[in-house]
Image 1 (cartoon, one colour):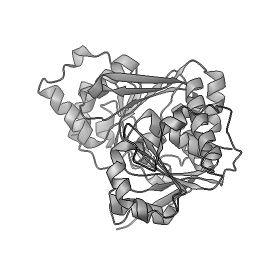
Image 2: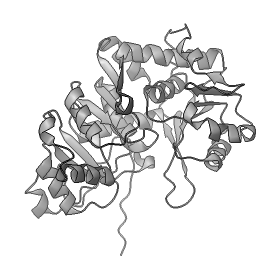
Image 3: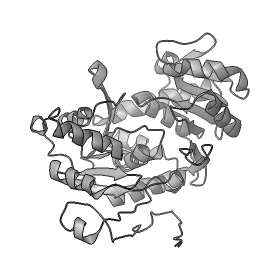
Image 4: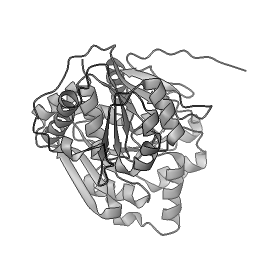
Length: 364
């Protein structure tokens, strides 16, 4: 099954319900797409790529955006026609873009205009790329303005049938031990990831996932997937900088779950303790889960989080190759018994996700 089929289904089941809400606090702007609008925007992208740019099933498309509605609509437009999306780290410099292009041999490159200088500097080296599509106010000569896709009049259903083993995306790891490594995910593996993450933290169609971390990375994107499949709302913060923006989104959009790495949690706690943030100013009653981790977390941090906030705290590790969430809640029985830590058996990875194979190796 094409993983974009959930979008088609939810556009029929939840037509007017909010699918995506983009908050841009720095510019005091908010944009919303209903499930029906989300599907129509994706169909515009998909049909334009297929008809005007001749992108076909199995072709690779580079994708470089900061968090935005366009990040998501272009991603799903690519996979809906059976092409393979290659989302890039927004921190990639020219050499990294060349490296990713050499590995993936893309036929097209969709990106935000804030990356114009980087892309233009390597454009001549990307010899397999036939078309460059730029989203933003500044479109370099010889490239295609994203407004052409937005104004494209073909919104007919563009979904192409796919098998579970067909590749959906080539993602790049963080590169902490060398060059970023390419990881292939299939339509089946993303479906398994959505199911597995959905079983980990109980959710309903009325829940709301807050996307703060960059979507190109497996963390926030993979954790949002069960909400997408279920027809729940996703809220993303554009240009995240200030911790109060998370609290404002929880208050105003009634978000229920978010993933925040340790430095973000520390920043939030510090601003509360210094009096820069007054928690009495926010209604946090909808907040069910704060997921943190991807590194060892001091017990003192968990203590402060559970003292300050009404939600359960989950400690998570993940891997791009494993569907994002390879879970290790390794908190002591003494500590977890006294707090609201959402955890499994001590030192356990929990049950493996559906469709995920793994081995445990003990080393001295």
